[in-house]
Image 1: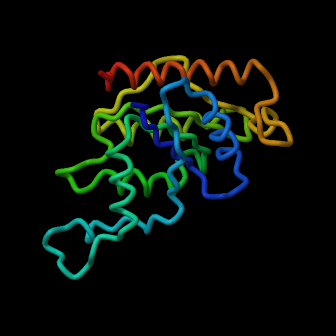
Image 2 (image 1 turned 120 degrees about the vertical axis):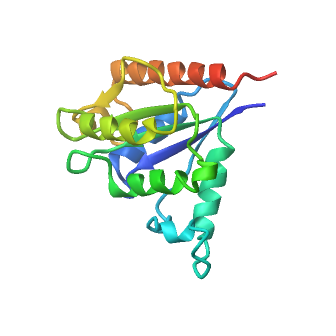
Length: 191
């Protein structure tokens, strides 16, 4: 039975660099893993009224339920995100909040996570990655140690087809994906 990995892209733009990087990542998982992009673009803005048992006139959106169930069925989550204004994009924060409720059934709880951040500047999305790690730390997630992956000047790392254009970047990302896969295996051993 394959390990199911939900890949979440912290960008809604169809042609985003984060999406191109994520497509590279899909092909780097070892045998026995099934990575799948889980779209967050259609998630309504988080509203606690949907999860408040005291509020009976607002039904939980079907998109919330489907997203939460997808996460809970995953053996790990792999994020590829841009940086917006020194933090994570709003769409990604919204997804984190949706997966964090209801309190009695948090979808993120104890999941292995991998994170790649990028930026068109030199910092490689450092602030977004640190903010994402902070938001997820509350849920007891596990992730590979150093080196972390911050891809600076990301447009220069991709060819016209959106693939990594040099072995050094590809190998660096592949090593991180491999270490993330090891964390997933340790966390969810197969019989």
